Amino acid sequence: MGVPAGCSGRIDFCLDFANALGRVHWRRYTKQMMKLAQNILLSLPPELSHNLAISGLNAMGQLPGQITPLQGRKVTFLGHELANPIGLAAGLDKDAQAVLGLAKVGFGFVEVGTVTPKAQPGNPKPRLFRLKEHQALINRMGFNNQGVEAMAGRLEHVRQSGRVSHTLIGVNLGKNKDTPLEEATQDYLISMTRLYSLADYFTLNLSSPNTPGLRQLQHGGALAELLGRVKEAQQKLANGRSVVPVLLKVAPDLDDEDIESIAAQLVMSELEGLIATNTTLERGAVERHVHGQEAGGLSGAPLTLKSAEVVKKFRIKLPANMPIVGVGGISDPESAQAMLAAGADVLQIYSSFIYKGPNLVQKLVAGTSKIS
Ligand SMILES: Cc1cc2nc3c(=O)[nH]c(=O)nc-3n(C[C@H](O)[C@H](O)[C@H](O)COP(=O)(O)O)c2cc1C
Image 1: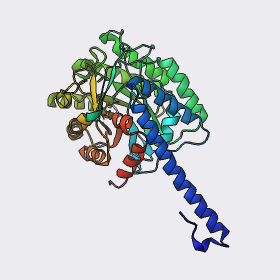
Image 2: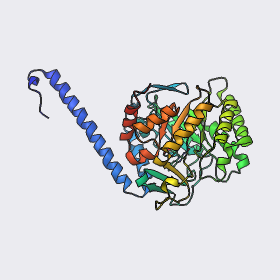
Image 3: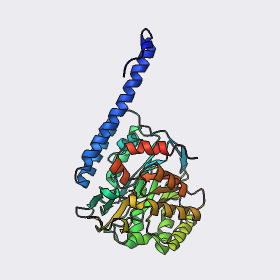
């Protein structure tokens, strides 16, 4: 690109021009580097590439400077104004190791976890499979995480740094594998109590298919008991101040009756919101794939329609002021818009972020910025 002829003698203009050119080149260069890193990561075994990505994001977060989300469509969510409605779904940063780096990517909100009270190793490897042709993943990680104390230490560090003030940080809570189902509530309360001053919201994960029996807690008396005790603890912990909101994350594999009763329970217990959905047990779309029959939860493109359908059904049953986080197979501006049209207030992504990388976040923020 040549310098314009009018530049001679007009120093300010020339400097502005050179700066702008530099910025354009730098942005293009960064985009290209991200794409290259993405391709390298996708050529490595899935869990190794996941760990490398977390380390890379962690390193990115150590670079100095204030961190702000990408500016897009502003949306009020859980009493906060988000700069954009695109969030990172739980499970990618299970131990809050890369919160600053993820915030730097530009997400409007980042959900860490699932965290359990005690550290646990999760299921034996291999436990994460790419189904690239379907832009999908199957995982049976089994809540591998370093436990609530390790997470608390990292989030304290993030808060004390004062570098993230406009990116909401949610924490997704689960139960330890060896905690009997009847005592599960206690696990949610332990983690919530320890992290209460560090989280902008909590998610009760009752929908992972990889912890035996967990999904049963989404139903009937078990759900009523759990939500009742969590709300009681939330009020106590708030101690007269405004509460840290609690959301419920549900599976996509629910029939109409389940949806109706869960929605009624959410209203009755005055929970602050819903996240729909987690991964599916259904395999129809991928049954011929070499990994199609791996045990675990399927995520990514095969979930797009199913998750939006679940969101749509919940939207009808829930009051308009109860926010819904739409997640499942969002991978481009069209699927993002479809999820918003189904009734979601904000969105989360996971699998598409693995396949497309940080550049996708910019695309989604831009692609959702014009919806009223
Ligand atoms: C490898 C992997 C690990 C996940 N771990 C968790 C988790 O720990 N807690 C949780 O609530 N959801 C977890 N999820 C589910 C995602 O948060 C999300 O709900 C689901 O993948 C659907 O979104 P997607 O189609 O954009 O991936 C995980 C998903 C994947 C692929």
